[in-house]
Image 1 (cartoon, rainbow, N blue to C red):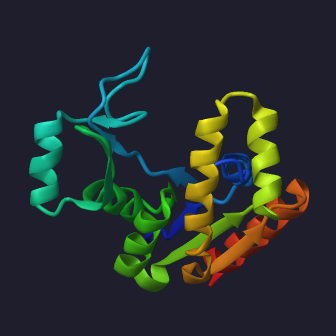
Image 2 (cartoon, rainbow, N blue to C red):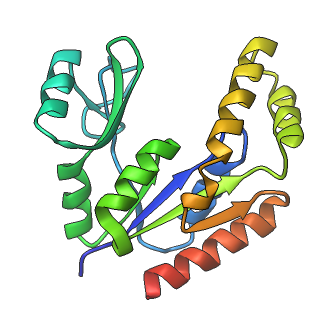
Length: 188
């Protein structure tokens, strides 16, 4: 039986990765979609494992050919995207495919797959709390945090377009809510 898609999107610092990692360990037959990128491999990364590594030219050629469900040029010649063929292969093998993409990519993929996909938006309790979390991380300069907050405010405007919105005020509660929502979707 073919699998289903679960699409996650969230502003930076909302706890999305933590929630996804929790869900991956719940025996729900979930597998990450392997994205494509035009950046070179880092450290021990291998093609087809962490990413599919493409040259910027190859990436552009595949965009023109319509091979991507979604893609983004983050910086000049630095692309990231989701290949249709890879997602289809994973779905056909019966895996439930997890995608972690930006709000635009999430909307494109949801439109493409319709009821075969569940789109989940992880929302921080407030923008003030999000700022606090980003500051507590201690990894970003104040101007980077300001950029992330501005982007988060924009991304939050997309929440109503998602099938389900989970407010991560209490992590255990958010994980339980996400798990219940996924189980209901996968069983339907």
